[in-house]
Length: 53
Image (cartoon, rainbow, N blue to C red; front, side, top):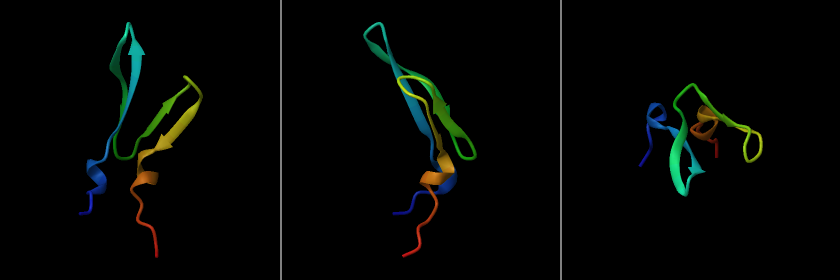
């Protein structure tokens, strides 16, 4: 089953006081980025592009 590209979201959770809580959300056309525990940035669209076989 194909996932519609506009329905994909990335969620970043962080541990605080022994519980994980949502820290960031990125949807279509956005980039999920953080500096901790190491710097990274993930373009949501890069995960949904169709690959040629």
